[in-house]
Image (cartoon, rainbow, N blue to C red; front, side, top):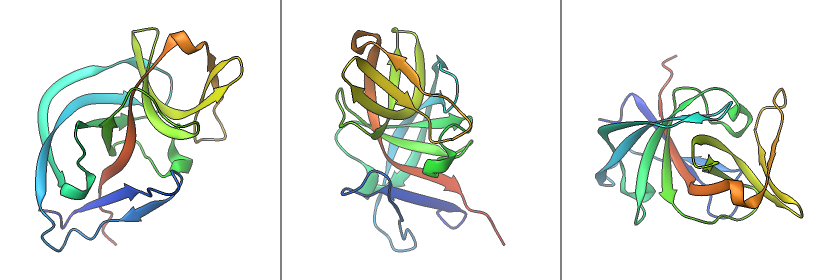
Length: 155
């Protein structure tokens, strides 16, 4: 199942670090819902789907779901267009964590969230893109990135 797939897990000590999961050993798998697309670029409305994907048990928390990434605003955090991110549903995050947020109850995006004195800053991990500054009440955290699934590149 996992021969052509690569799974990365976020470090529990540093949200900037990823480790490759060795899925050749039978670690157990669980199906989670793939809810649709999220942009790693300009915010857009979320598109829902009813698919499910299998992921290693290590990536599954209480309320876990997956979203497919569109865009390249998170490439410097090793999250690429076409990756499937594994999300733990949460309503709050630590400043600097990579998360999925809803803006103005309409648009959903994937960014690093920083809590500033005058609101929230959504920061892309792409130096060619700009931050988004918002008031606290305009942002709803939907979850944090716990890992990702990527098609392996064959050499």
